[in-house]
Image (tube, rainbow, N blue to C red; front, side, top):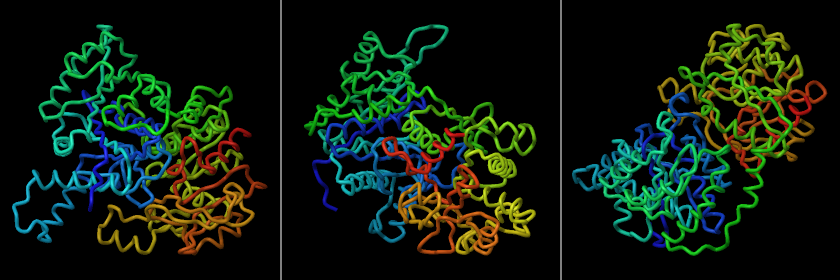
Length: 549
């Protein structure tokens, strides 16, 4: 493939500790460069040996974000799409597993001509080739590449080495940013720069010198701290960017521009901006995160919340952000509560406590944990006219509940939980049964963007304002069993969306407005399509109904 020599690369590397905000920093860098008129692409490198994020427990790694292509990726890819307001492709994501899988497959096919295949240069060069291919396929002026993990991790050394070689070959086209943390120990009361100094020295040991340091801290950096970092890290003071804790991650691009980060990046990359920075629309959106006198209380009934003594909301990150985008558009502030489905199921939390919420969401998931608690939530919302929105697994809970209590199908269930249920209203796709029999799990679900035909006169037809929607993203093995669709419809449930390529696949179920203000579930994940400047219409309709309640 011919390489365009004008492509520029920014590598974002973490220092001191994980969870320092590299993903948001990378997304924000993309945003501020795009606001200067540049074509920007964002790439995520994950150092783990999993080929993709699909087989990982959300408690370990947070949400699995699905691209249009069907690739299961890290949740940072969702942040990238939301900040850039565009779709990313499979070339924009890379794991160690993908890299090694490609190298080994090529070796097995004599792609290396019988040479001894080694980490250096072959694995490293595969990384370089993937990065250049991503830049070429996106036709971007600048690729911003987040290297997962923290400097010093054994797992990401190969990727930093690839970046070093790219810089060595074309020093004017590659720059490095370290996102590091400056702690303020409570017993000392002073911001400390030494951990970042040590992190920079460790990066220097790899042959890499950061051009910019983004200094994460509980509060803004003072000039004294900037001077110390400049002296000991060999970075000019204007290239040390203060990144204090903020109320909303959507404030980060605006904060970066206060320190003129885009000017510094353009200077280092020797790129001319095509326009002055235009973040007006973004700033207007970000302002809504601080406003909203009226509140709307949303309860999310899920199972991926408890991890020791902490709550892991990242398991449903896209759902949370989709709620925010629609709420901000409607000028209300969402108060989101985590409701553990296991507590509802055990009786530890009375189902009556759901009455305090303006709307209830049951999001996606797998397995039997807390399933009866989710069904209880669906039933309570239906009977008490509380707006209910079911996402994938939440649709299944809606259908099971309705089958049991409205269609006379006692003990109806999903075969995922009870293979011997007398009424398998939710069942696995036939082709999925074959894959499971072969123990094929990774990347084998119905994944990625698919179209849906909407029933005229239905709630969803009115919300979308059209008869067909394209590209709603899927991630599931189980479907509504077509054998029970007619019986459920006779009982009053409306299947208002179907797949045009396989008409027996039900995509949406709902109750008419004459029966319930908002009672709807989708087989797909609309949260994956919600963006700050273009909220998803289904979430907006759900929040509207919740406000009325």
